Structures are given as structure tokens and as C-alpha cells.
Amino acid sequence: MIVEVKDDSWASKAELRYCADKHMRDRYSLMLEDCATPRLWGLSVFGTSMRVYCGDRGRFEVSPPVVARPEPSSRVLSPSFLFGEWSLDVLSQEGFDKIKDIVADILAETGNLE
Image (cartoon, rainbow, N blue to C red; front, side, top):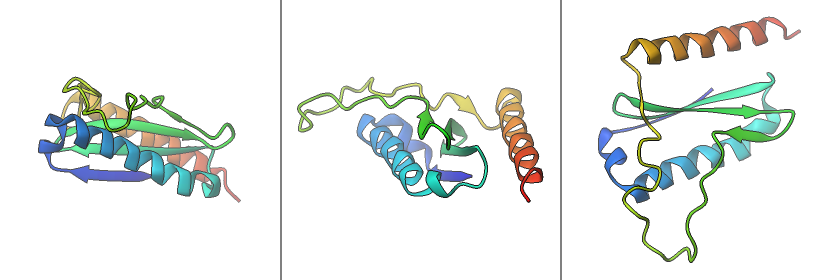
């Protein structure tokens, strides 16, 4: 599992949201191939808001899909870029249920390792 935690100010700036997403995807590039289970879960957290990632080891894909930075790369990002992508509140029932589902998946898959 990959967990990246930043303070909640990261949610307010498009460039910081882009950097956080890119950092998560860079981690997947380094770790997915060596993952012992079919899925590598990731959480990017800003304060109590999180975005859930899932890497599929068999297909070498990460969801949610990447949102490409607008060209040219020197262009300043619109304030709406990736806005709302960290919308799952860790402290909500929905956030608790999602984390519980992720833990159950990890435990089920690691129980199948021998």
C-alpha cells in the first residue's frame, strides 16, 4: 500500500494537486512490478480528504486514469485542474467503508500468498 499525506492546503492549488498525483504515479512506476498481490492500493491524502488509487499488476494500469497536463507544459494550470478529485473524507462513513474494503482486499490477497 502506498500512502502519501500532505496538509490540506495542497487541495487549494492546481499545481500542488498535479504534483501529488504525479508523485503517486511515480511511486506506482517504481513499485507495481514487484507487488506480490494483484492490486497495489494507494491513498493520497490532503488533511482528511483522500483520493484512492489502485494499480493492477497484471495490466500495469493505475486508476483513476491520468489527467494529462495541458500543453504546452509551461502553461499555468487552470484553478479547476483536478479540483474535487480528493473528495472522499477519511472521517466519513463512506471513507471508513472504502478503507475497510481496501484492507479486506489486501488481507484476502495476502492470505493467498504462499
